Image (cartoon, rainbow, N blue to C red; front, top):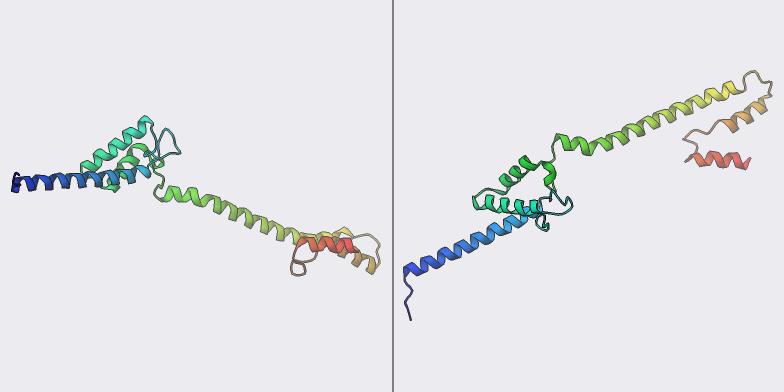
Length: 171
């Protein structure tokens, strides 16, 4: 049996460290590849895609990791070269904030405008009711009955607009 000397122990340790480093790089590369969108497929991560661009990007990621680059540096390089759309989770900045918040703001403005017009129209109904029978000879009872039919109740008196319709149908 040959004796293992200090040289052989150092060689084994170096090989072991290289394998560990290689496994770490591979794990990091796979993690990054799962977060990067294939530019050709669009719906697939480059880790699963077999498109040429995906294979190229996986190689670029592994090369950058071998050079000692951090994940953040690699993401920055990819977004600089290909744009934010290459990432499944793009950064939240002013431009993306506008894209996400614009629909919410639009719905709020439309709802506010609708409520404003609704209140304004309900106020106009009272004026319309008074002017509708102006100049028509009606008794006080007839005027009150017609006003009650034409004028919807205030929101405080009914929970919904359907109550007003039910009131008309029950008469």
